[in-house]
Length: 298
Ligand SMILES: [Zn+2]
Image (cartoon, rainbow, N blue to C red):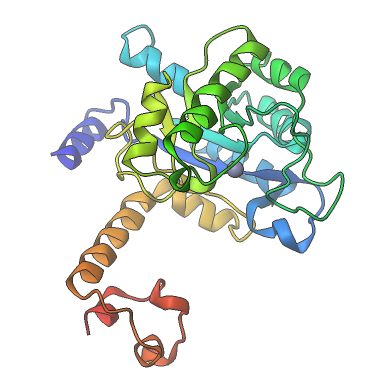
């Protein structure tokens, strides 16, 4: 049904409602230490991504824009896209924002509610002065440039594994702290590590958020569950071609379908694949997680 609706929209040249949501972390001019490699892109590569989006006619929107659209107060551009940044790194402010402004783009930055936190110590507990986070002034300035500020919990804990009281504190208090900085309400949240279940979703809803982002867990179609919004992770391994494939093809639908098939086959056969199975097709795959579904059925 949703498929048909999407095709219909495309046929009529209306807004494609399946809005892609991209997830970035760090944007650096120089390659970082080994530890944070998985979640950075170089500023040059990031600018290439923005250029491609511009060239293909995308317009960046924020979750607040989408909320206004839902309320009937804003019409969306023909090809909307949402660009998000987790953690609120200093380099998001220094490197990513100027590049985006150059292309008249805006994004959503999920910052930490615990404002005494100066650096992302969950990334790299060892190195002092690395992984610095945006300060309050930078958060206010980013917002004044048209970027949406959302919350990323208080202390970047795995929200699934903490008790109800701590969960409430991590989510609700982060909203309050960031609203104090901005002097206005915020509407969006991103789950640390993309870790979310129904209890965590409910806590985000009860805290008053209107949107909350996971990474690999939510439905393929934007708008189906505003409290588990699937995002497309963009990291160093993604060159321009892969980036374009993820943006221009129904990448998240393929990813979602694959996860569904994997879930179904795992439920059917709860046995963890043996090392022998993992070696099928001449490939050793860690824990069988990357395996093709048919291997798991065996
Ligand atoms: Zn994070």
